[in-house]
Image (cartoon, rainbow, N blue to C red; front, side, top):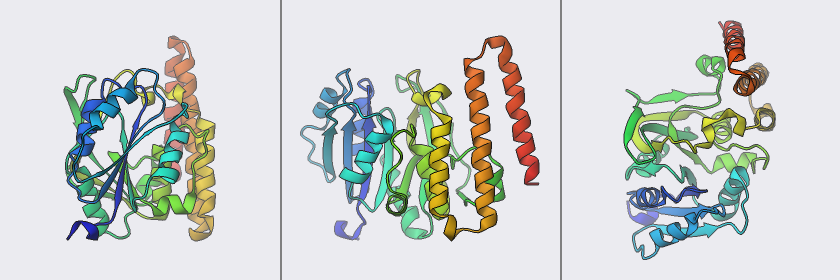
Length: 300
């Protein structure tokens, strides 16, 4: 196909205090082989000089991709920053997310777009990955032996404690945004919410193909559960579920409500465990294991 015949895709690359990782992340984004790609590099007003390095890294680029460089006038925080990019700056029919410390492999968007174009019902695609440390050294991987599909009504999904579909390098159809609208600014996380929204509309796919180098380091927000407010995240899940209540069965709706409430109980216990004295932590660990077991038995 000629370039104009490929649907427009948007790769969103979000930075905040990522000065050490900017050059590798930008290089990975610009190396994408998909021919009709808009790349938005956006810094959330980092105080550490991230934007200066970012600006220098994209200066002089004359490759095939349309590049947009954005710096927020003030620090918005993760979800308001994501909302701005998704609903104000992006134009693609397909959206791909990239953290400012992660490195997309050159075929990443091409691989995910191939799945979308071959499987019209698929609403989201994630993939396998290599883990790297702060200095870029490989430390492990999350590689699947084969592609896996997941639907919101799968018994396996309903039993699980999580709203994640597995894998990293989230890509989804713009339909997800059009149906659900902006995320609540106080939700504090975008990744699991967007995956859940996609699942409510159709199947998600986790590819066995490598898409990303996923960086794990001490500054990762996700390393500390106390960085997230469980009640606000659960409230977002409930609002999104309510938005599609009339299009799913009453039985499935009730099971998903139960799943959200179960998620909340587990996460709240984990928060208390993280804040409790070391000697009491095993008690909280036992508590949420019991809750998981009871939840599992309900779906046998």
